[in-house]
Every structure is written in structure tokens, then in C-alpha cells.
Amino acid sequence: MSESQVRILGLSGSTRKESFNSKLLGLALSSAERQGADVTHIDLGQTPLPFYDGDLEADRGLPENVQGLKKIFENVDGFIIATPEYNGFFPGILKNCFDWLSRRKDSHDPMLSSFDGKTALLMSATVGGSGGVRSLTSLTTQLHYLGVTVLPRPFSLTHAGKLFSESDSLLSDSLALLDDRVSALMANLKKS
Ligand SMILES: Cc1cc2nc3c(=O)[nH]c(=O)nc-3n(C[C@H](O)[C@H](O)[C@H](O)COP(=O)(O)O)c2cc1C
Image 1 (spheres, rainbow, N blue to C red):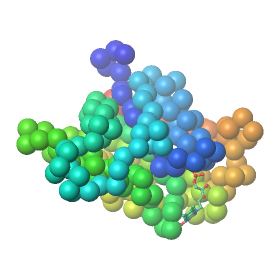
Image 2 (cartoon, helix red, strand yellow):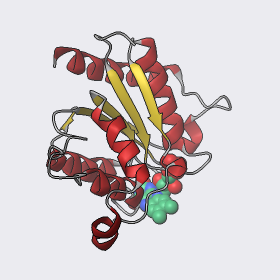
Image 3 (cartoon, rainbow, N blue to C red):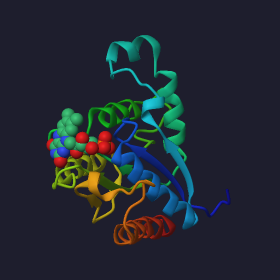
Image 4 (cartoon, helix red, strand yellow):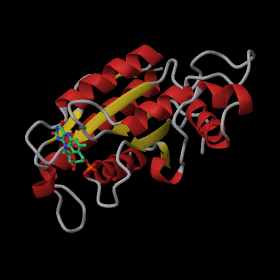
């Protein structure tokens, strides 16, 4: 990785094997790589975190997986996050991850170092016609609170079950739109 390379972390809010959001994330991360980014992908299904518990934290400090994720988050410039919509909100697996990552290892650890000053491109795929508008709105509110700039015009995919081809790709119109949103993220991160 060169020093000028933009570093992007990809996260999906779904751990489902055939998740449309994870497929969408894969396409966006490939686009970011083609556009010159250094890309890291975290599969939250493979990085289990306990539910946030203040007693657990007081007794044992930050769990090992949280410490590992904190280092990864701190070392990137921005995020691409693909979120399902669960009952009009973004899913708990992301909320729990963010709650743990908002905690400090000790008093020398800067506040919100996993998030502050970073920029995120948000995406959502749903099987219905909502395109995840409510999960995108709630996730935006959460990320703003944590100090993340959320790029305008998130990528929203409706009727995802009908749109992905057998090779897990999208039609060229959707791919072009996705490339455009990733370019906007790259341009934002190159400026900062
Ligand atoms: C608990 C639950 C709640 C859901 N709530 C919504 C919802 O509020 N709006 C919506 O458009 N789809 C909703 N869905 C359908 C999801 O959009 C669909 O299951 C989608 O495929 C999940 O994303 P994934 O393919 O990345 O796993 C819900 C699904 C589940 C399992």
C-alpha cells in the first residue's frame, strides 16, 4: 500500500450467506479497488462480539475482537457500509459493534478514535420496494453522533431478489450508479 492510497473498510449488516447487502458490498469494494483504494473487508459474522455489557467491560476490559476491530477502524480513512432494514431500522449487529467501538481501552485512548473525522458511503438492499430508506436514515443519525461524515445520496437497491444475476452481479445501469457513488467517496477522501 502506498502512503497516498485511500484506505476503505467495508462492513455488511447482514451475516446471511446469500445476503444481498453483502453482495452489494462486494461489488462496491471491487469498484473501490479498481479506483485505487486499499480495501479491507470485515465479516461481522466471523468476528463475534458479546452484547455490550458494562460489567463485562469493567471486569475484563475490551474483548479481544473489539480491540482487533478498533485497530482496523482507526487505520482507515472511510467506510462503505451496506445495511439491511430490520423493522424500519438498521440491524442490531451494527449497533452492538458501534457501541463497543465507541468505548476507550483506557484514559489515554482518544475519544471515538474508530469514527471521528472519517467519511462513510451507505448502501441498502431490500427485497421489497423501500430500498432501506429508513435503515439508511437511522444509520446516518447513528454515524453523525459518532463523528462520521455521511456522504449524500446513499445507494439504495429495491427488489434486490430480482436484480442480482446468477453471477451475483447487477445490471449495467445499477453498476454504473454504484461506481458513481464509490467515486464520490474516493473524491471526498482524497481531499481530506
Ligand atoms: C427481522 C426482519 C425485519 C425486516 N424488516 C424490513 C423492513 O423494515 N423493511 C424492508 O424493506 N425489509 C425488511 N425485511 C426484509 C429484508 O429487506 C430482507 O430480508 C433482506 O434480504 C435482508 O437483507 P440481506 O439479504 O442482506 O440479508 C426484514 C427482514 C427481517 C429478517
